[in-house]
Image 1: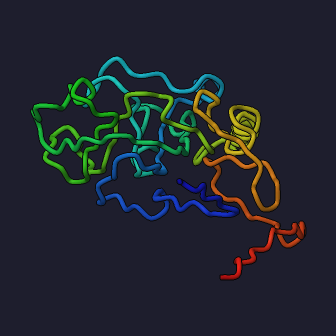
Image 2: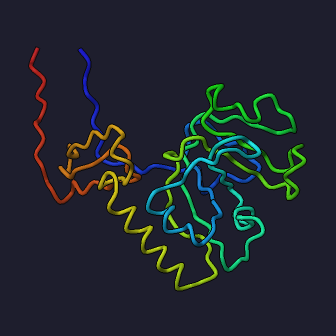
Length: 222
């Protein structure tokens, strides 16, 4: 007979803060990345999310980078006062490394079963003059916009950050803030009875305040 195991507390550990630019991303992990955009498009991106580009170095997708300085370069040929850099959390899925010109999967990685393409820093791709790493995500829903990392206009930055916070708070699951399209098995904690979601980062069980009695086990005499 199978027994059910219950948990009453946890803390999730994210790779995003510890992964250096030189480290290869691991499949199915969540990483902190950045995306540079024109300031005039910032509100639309926060409200509607990212749109996949029609083409690019790695083909169609949303282009992001773990290197904040690289993201600050985009859009190209745009005054710094007209730029905004978004801080993101990216669920990379299955990752393909593209590290040289004319790689056989340079633009066809998605049709071959990959969710994200990664160009490591100082790769043998001639068009990346800076040598900084780059990523391309096929599905925009894998990207969660969590903050405004850079905007030269302080008033506009505060306005955009307020909008980001309101979207994170109001959309998706109330506990983990992910899209409600995902299967969220929200249940009460078996110890403190607080509603919990398996996708939320942390649950601190306050069981010491509940003082629930547990049934005692008395072995039968032989």
